[in-house]
Amino acid sequence: MRIGIIGGGLTGLTAARRLTHEHEVDLFEKMPYLGGCLSSYTVNDYWIERYYHHCFSHDNRLFALIDELGLSDRLEWRTGTTGYFAHNRIYPLSTPLQILMYPELSLIDKIKLGLLTFRAKKTDLATLDDVPAYQYIIEHLGKNVYSSFFEPLLKSKFGNRRKDVSAAWLFSRIAIRSDRGMSGERLGYMKGGFHQIIDALERSVESKGGKIQKQTTVSSVSYRNGSWEINGTRYDAIVSTIPPQELERFGGPVLSPVPYQGAACMTLGIDRDVTGGIYWLNMKDPAPYGAVVAHTNFIPPDRYGEHIVYLASYFSGKVPPNLDTQMLTDFCNRFSLAEDEIHWHRMAIDPWAGPVYTTGYRSLIPAYEHRGLYMAGMFSRTNYPERSMEGSIRAGSEVAECIGRRSGD
Image (cartoon, rainbow, N blue to C red; front, top):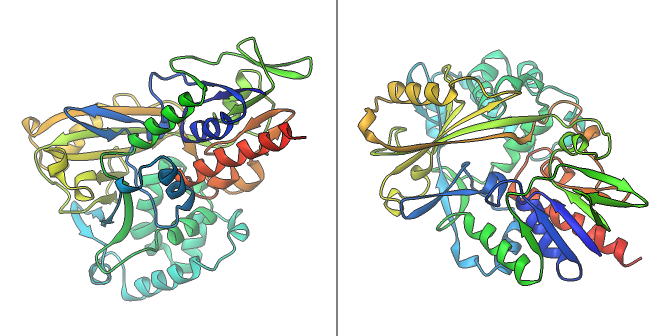
């Protein structure tokens, strides 16, 4: 079979690698680089991801892929610390003692939080798909727990759409991040950067005869005489990893739109640590970013020769005007950084960064196949109710298996 794949992110590359064993594969990527949200910059003599990344201890498909690509020796486990920026002050919230000392929550609030953590691991998420997260928290834990603890988290991940998010996402988030020790959360990283996975996938696809076309825009998808075409070229099957509503614009099937949001992420190289040793700092105080992710409080700064910080912001529709200037100015003022302490900064913007797990999201998840056209990506059921590298790899593998079964009929 001749198969066309739209999108060179983790799902598209995983599907391409599986399918090139037995099929002729063309992969189209509009950007000059592969990886999508897992793509990286080269800065000075090192690689750094455009968007902050880590993995979790239960990401078994990811670990299997890393092993298959011969990269297992690069995977390392480190401690990720967390905190909140409230009333112009940093509050560490990684250890039980730090949580007990957090003045924004009462002792009863903290007991309720602890009970919720235990409950999250056993809850049927399907029962929470139609329940707004903020409503659940306010009803079961109180307004203060919501405003002082959960609202900054929801804001850092979903911006102005935080009240649309379901409790299913929230419970999944709590459960997925429960691998904690006394000093913080156990998280994984690829020594040298996650670009190694993307590069190895690219080599694997091309070594098996697959064709990867970067900087190639897909402008039309059409169904003619029982088969699909991409930009006028016939394929026996097409795999699209872009949002379903984007595919519809090019001629794909008409489906219920999956709610998406954009991401604007500024990466900075700076002289020193400004978050008090904390890796992930949620902003409770108003700011043009929802979180400060200090990469070099997770990975040692001596690997880069400087400290690296991400400023994370999400948006719906268009990017707010002058957002990069607002971010940089606010960050310098808030964390007392002089202009000459910033070595460099870069802004990554993706208008389709990922789904928003709104109430009722489960009913919007598209099936893999639609008349010989396949769709898989961050919108797939493997990424519900929390997107991850693991979910994207599973989506790519599963859609490749669907095509394999069809070709064997």
